[in-house]
Image (tube, rainbow, N blue to C red; front, side):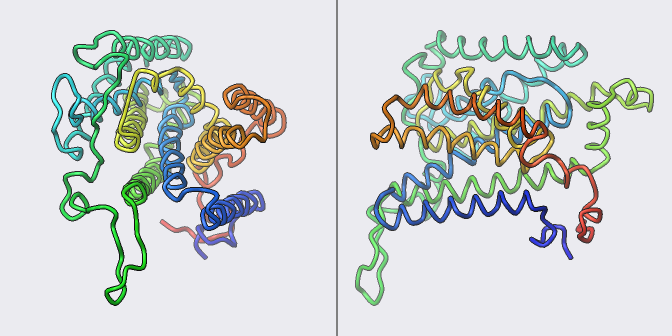
Length: 369
């Protein structure tokens, strides 16, 4: 029996799957009854996937390497601005570059900065890294805000194309896109639905690829050394491991995944501004990782989804007049209560690292790799 079979899941995992299934069914009914627009549902899925990527990136650094990084928003912003500056028609420095090529521009920018900030700080104690990364996040945001000749400043960047805009077939679709059956139009699809669906396909592929990649490296000797460094760095050095090199590699990998989320965000929302780099983004991602279970990629994904559910759910409840207060204070209050609840009742998180740390055989299934 494979470790991925449902029969090998713990009761807690089955409960999480059941809850997500019920929520999915509720959203599907909301769409079918016209209560929720299909394009908005697809947008929410894309936003959830973006937070999953951010959470998995931080999980590489903190969950496995024990590195405290408070500059999640900075690397997210570098990815977002990197691709936006290269592709947007309103870019002050370039524009017009294919999004596929610009993707590597955003990732390269994040990799360079990760090395620059990681080299002088990763040899220091964790608290120094935390201070340095917090300062980095603000430096990046303020730089983008003030250097308007390069970044468009507080106005933000507009005119960002869709990721598939220059692709054959997909980029040439005309709207509304109508499906025919026997010469009779049976379904009329608007541009927002088509582009949102394409974004969901794109980000699903990205999330799946990142998850499988992290699963592989975390169960490899590299991942085991990284966990040893987090538990006892002196022991790892005694065993002859170059702990600085391992931490640098983990820091760069995590930063690239965060930048990847930023690239996707730019081509999802089609607008970026310095307000997207606020420290609250870093705060939400940390909550997502702790909520899901530090060191667990599955937990990080669940945490990212939960954060978006709280963000958008509170906005929805306020818009419908179900609550007498605004969304922003309610959202922060719910996140705060969630943190207290988790710390008190499940300090290890909802889906703590089990399958990531042991062989699937010990869970009752066969070894699948």
